[in-house]
Image 1 (tube, rainbow, N blue to C red):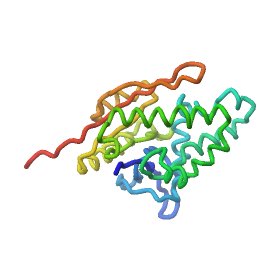
Image 2: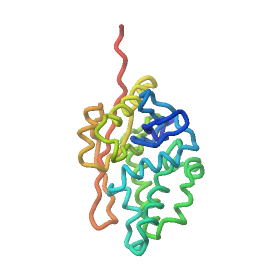
Image 3: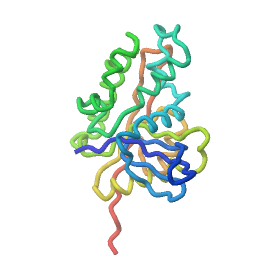
Image 4: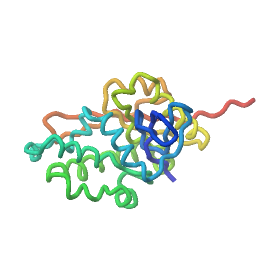
Length: 230
């Protein structure tokens, strides 16, 4: 079974009962607390908080805005655009981004009603099929036996502290234990260099082409590392 997402988030804990989301989210299955630096599995009830973390991280991301800032939404307010942006990123763990279980559990089906006509075409007819088909082509027989790092982002206020590295390394160790590859798409030109240092290798590039200019994504895979014999 393919492993997927759940938001690896670093939280700033101020007391035993009060915490504020402070950092990195990955759709896979965990969260870390600054005080202990130990990842934990997020609950389904925390999906909204994880989405808010990701929304902050991807507020200026071309791909994230590709479905929100469409010509037929030019009249929408900034608040309406932000609400839609958060909704797109609110997804619980699932087998795949576009499987029926994830779509229902996450409330992604509501996007059929919230996205504009052009946004629906971009998200459901261009984006999801392109990601699905590319992943299948790159991973081949391992498509359903990989860790899929769907979104990786750090809140603006918490960047530069090594949280993303710590969380990706944590996922990498789990993938190594299970002998699974890790797969991701990167929409930021700077990130492939960072991911390469964490063991990811470039495989191909894809483009979203319905906007004013093509938006390119790098496809990268980290192969499992076998433990050295003692």
